[in-house]
Length: 369
Image 1 (cartoon, rainbow, N blue to C red):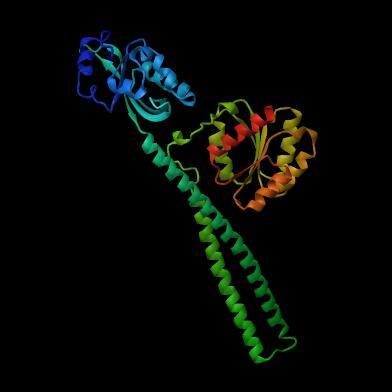
Image 2 (image 1 turned 30 degrees about the vertical axis):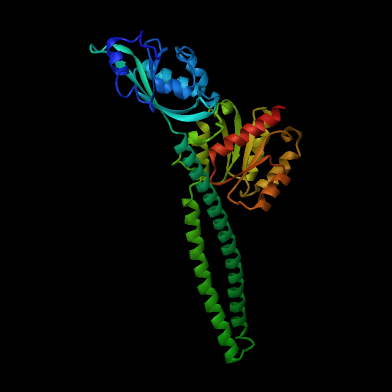
């Protein structure tokens, strides 16, 4: 039976309520020392453990290792400030599997306003999390498809534009030669019709390219609408604290995004706006022995990312430094070229930060072996 001996009268009233007796709502109560002194029947049934095993801090062993410290930080911070809190974490239940639970914690005061401890209410939300995860994966797949289609249309527009410009130039040149060596009236009319059509089609292609560019900017692959806790394997940013990265990116907006999202992790970032600047910065950082990894945009002015990577790999100091290619091009041939040039990883724009952290963790682990 749940323990009620350590509860004061006001807490006993709460324990006797219909909510505490519910079989679907898991409830715990902690005293002023943060130690849990009560668990209701629904909690013990869901966990498949005895009250003695759960009391005080025994229940904490059921929290998923990746959620453990995050839970403690939230719990202690709220407890010390007497604030309510809400968080999601994974908890081992009676089937020996981790389930997502949503927990609502609130400070408890007696009738005289004296702080008595905390009460927590938990709900098993694994099914809704699974649905959200499937939806997230579907949106990611759709996003990649949209990017591939947009890149294809972009390349197609470029090819058509170049071809139409050639046609326009040749018809103009032919019409100028008509003044020197006159053409037949019918032939001259055909050339004029070709020129008019090529000018019209060039304008159509230009509008299509503009619309496609706007669509590319609107694609959101960061999926900010979804809960980051859906990741089955969380990758912390603490591993980047104190490290130094060289990021070569000619787009100012992309540099701002990298600065905001990576800078908050304690990473020291050195930016370069073109390939030649990146090469110079890399040599300086290498001489200082302060360079830990490199991110290179493949399409940069002065020196492109593929050429720069090949140049860096020729130097002994850059043989083992992780290098990651960054590009909006999602074609396999581009990825293949990147790996042939000496890159260790490849990420697409817009950059998925969770994917980047996972890739960095993988590269650092590989480098440590």
